[in-house]
Amino acid sequence: MKLIKQISLIGLTVVLLSSCAKIYYSPDAKVLANKQQTIAIVPPEVSIAPNKEIDAEAMKEQQKAESLNFQNEIYSWMLKRKMQGKITKEIQEIQTTNAKLLKAGYPENPLTTAELCEVLGVDGIMTSNFGLSKPMSEGAAVALVALAGTWGSTNEVKVTLSISDCENKKLIWNYEHKLSGGIGSSPSKIVDQLMRKASRKMPYVK
Image (cartoon, rainbow, N blue to C red; front, side, top):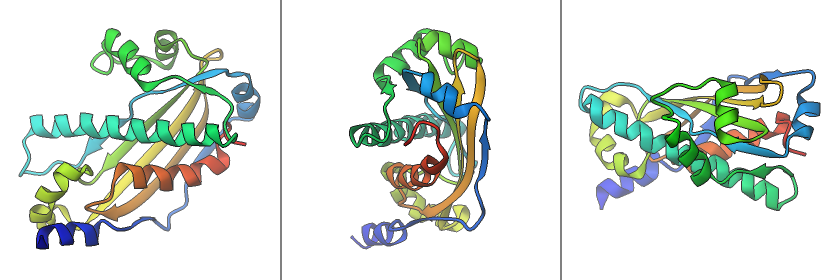
């Protein structure tokens, strides 16, 4: 019980660091985004800082799990805004997206933006990269309390979000930021904080 209380206390808050976000906005981003009908959210690339207490294979599996968690949270966030009328694009179901990518051998078989667009059959794709200083899932949180001395009590997250236009095969928007949270910080909290900030300059959001 004491351990659970510790996890709850250190995981209550996710806050933005004071550093400013870096944003790239193509001059024709809004025009090209408006032409898009269907978009897909590609599973994020996730990297976790190495720790001697966790072997390479376990870390690889953790990164895959975190990738799916972040993809689901971004998808849910976008759907909620679509229901609110703030986003008008059709968003490809992530089960469909992942099934198509699996058949193409991705991510073991790297694909270019143009190849991702062709495989997914959409007008625009959203890609992302999450660099974590430690795992974020609830399953890993208990173990991390014991490892806090070696991994630190704060999870630093470096995030990059990108939107590419499939017809023109080019990047039209890119957003980079750093976030910080306790060991118990969830992908949901991180994504919510991230998207609230990023959406102010995202060409899909009204």
